[in-house]
Image (tube, rainbow, N blue to C red):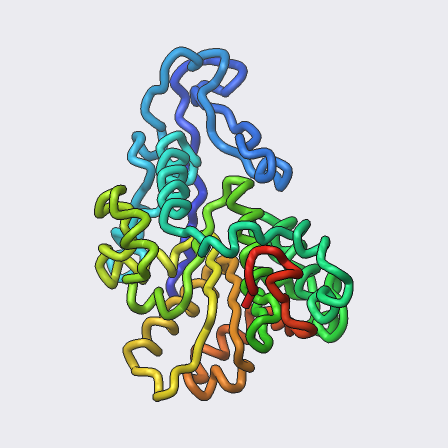
Length: 327
């Protein structure tokens, strides 16, 4: 049996006799982002007593931002870099860079930029009916940052019967025009405003990686930030590893989905499931219909991780939401 990875940092190395940091020259401080700090997240900072003037190399990773664990050659993690367990300045810089990149390539269509929870709450009551369960789930999703795990008991209706396991996948289902993407966009806009790393993309665009707005809006940013110019493997990795993923419009095409598409989607879902990465999905189809089109393996993973929330009621007309029809 292969032993599980142990990501605990090695024993602290003393550089001096400082009483504040114990000689490590770093201290563990509350995270700079208030939302993350409120959730108990911390980050490593130079000791104010002995290391305020300059930053020597991280004693764990030497400012590389990653380490390679001492593992047997037959271990699947052998030779693979993992983020520095000390959460040092190099790791934080890499995470900020990745977050900035996601924010540049993860831009909602213009008609969804005004979607917020407040805008939804201001709709006439008749238009909110059939959507209140989705509204509550979306609010809980953003309030439980950074892991976004929701207890079934916090929700209403049938979702309360799903046991005790917390889940951090939401699937908004229902007919076209009821507000599924609008609710997902409210999540995106809320988390983006809070500085979180979140990737929004339509499923079809995930396969083609040539969505028009990426080519046109970010051409000036260069190849590094042009999502359409990434290799297919890099695109797959960006989606698979996104800290929070909003996958819009999970479709079923008129003809059978290709095995290549099935394999790509399975790779995304299986990885995100194994790593418990927060995921929001919208679709016009039932899970049974998606299983027929995309395969039992993928849908079994999705069913096990998700709260499936129907979005019903009246269509959200342009004159009701003021930003165009929401699908």
